[in-house]
Image (cartoon, rainbow, N blue to C red; front, side, top):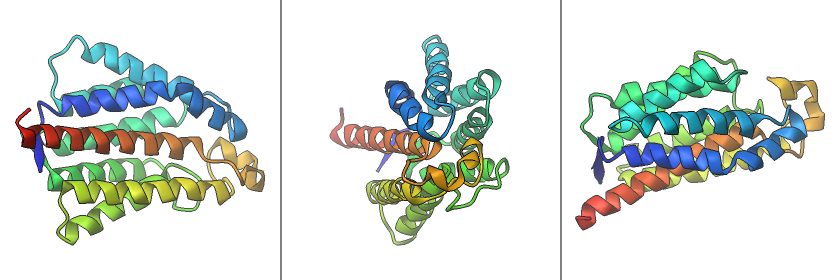
Length: 218
């Protein structure tokens, strides 16, 4: 199961569309424990990346790097640098890969996680995007180690990511703006964890659509 890096620009487009279409949803969630601007800032950055990519003949890696550059240079707060590093890691892990298969995707996720980990001290249980990303990457790794193909690995990843997202509802915020509320944040889903899930979901669904298109000769 695989698709070309060139065709993978569709994955980048899917991620951009997913973030932008969830602008209001992300802001509503953020308003419960933060400043309420997460969706606005995220959609602004991803929309700008989409506009720039519309003028380029980019492959997936170049598209991911474009998102990274826009988020770092144009979006304030903590999410710009964090997600900028995330997408830069994915781009670096795939730039020399003409074909994207399960092992390449694993390396992309691992590199993305390691880049974020260099910028934040957040751990699982702190009510952040790490509560989604950490179990998602580990689930993908475990599925791959067990011989799972791309579809199995991505589905296991999403299942773990969803559980991680749900877990943030029961956590007190320990880092970021939400930490000002502490235990009063319990009962509310974390906005950063939500956007992380949305990104991973779009990545998985678009990748599998490309695989099926390749296998079907479409």
